[in-house]
Length: 178
View 1 (spheres, rainbow, N blue to C red):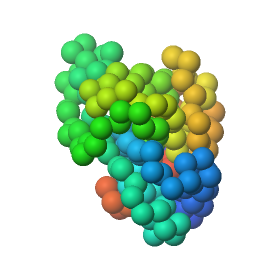
View 2 (cartoon, rainbow, N blue to C red):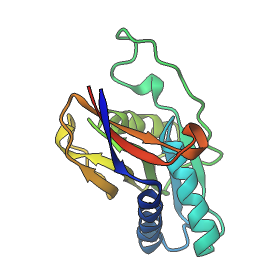
View 3 (tube, rainbow, N blue to C red):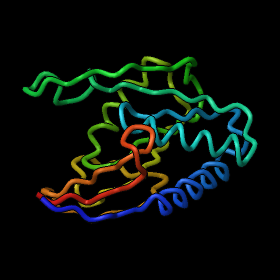
């Protein structure tokens, strides 16, 4: 098994600031926008973006939630035992602009599950997708990100591994080959 670096800590930081600026450009004061990290790995990215928007761009109130999609997945109950995460949503999304945030967009199935799961919290006005890594040739569903950090052309036996300092001790993105 081999791995090569796709993004260093410095490159991730630059991408996060670019994504924050793109969000700011499209949502201005975030008065009617909610950021929702897809559990488990999208939460780190969502928290980082919210922190950048608050600290560096003085955005006051950004509703930030974390959505568990475990029980909405189309492979739930089909063999592998999945570990559920907790949903933390202290607001309704009724008539809000929602931005789903996940670290890697692969087949699109997680986002399909998130689209179903979010309905428990109201009917959003619109939904956008922000992802750090877009594996564009691996899609099973017609889902594309509105905001992407980096596009990666990885074949199916390769894995994109995103490391976050808060969880893994470093910020890095690797392409792992079996």
